[in-house]
Length: 223
Image (cartoon, rainbow, N blue to C red):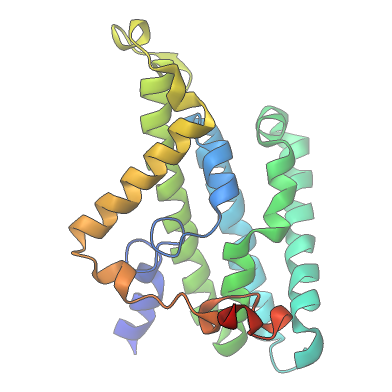
C-alpha cells in the first residue's frame, strides 16, 4: 500500500510528467518560461491549486452529480485560484504583475481539470493530495528546466542576475515563441530518449485519456 501511494507521488515527475509526457498545460509553459522566477511562481501557484482542488473534489466525489461534475470541478478550481490570486496580489504584487493573465487562467489549465476528472474523482483524499503534489512538482520542474535554458541563453541572466561573459552572447530567439517551442520539443525528445520511450508510449492519447471526452461524447475519435 505504501509503495502504491509512493507511486502516486512520483508518477508526475517523469512517468506521467504533465508537460513532457502528457503534453498538457502548454500555454502557461511557453508563456511563463522566459525567466526562472516567473516559471517557479507559476509552478508553485498551480501546485497549490492542484493539491487543494484534488482534495476537495475527492472528498465530494460521491455527492457531485455525474451530469454536472465538470462545471462543479471548475467552480472548485476557480475558488482556489481566486484565493491564490488574492494572496499573491496582497503580499507578492511584483509576482502577481509578472504572471498577469496566466495566473487567472489556472482555472482552465487542463492539467488541473484533467487530474480532477481522471484521478481525484476516483480516489481517496490522501491519494488525490499525493497525486496533486506529484503532478505539481513535475509541472514546476518542467517549467524550471525550460526557463533556465531560455533565460540563460536568451537573456544572459539567471533569476534576473547577469551572468558574466554569457550576457554578451545571447540568442534573442530563445525569449520568443519560436525559441520556446524549440526548447519544448528538445525537452520532450530528451525525456523520450532517457526513458527509452516507455514514459510516452504507455500513455493513451485516445478519448478515454482526455478530460474533455465527456463534453464531446467521444465523437472526436471518429473524425
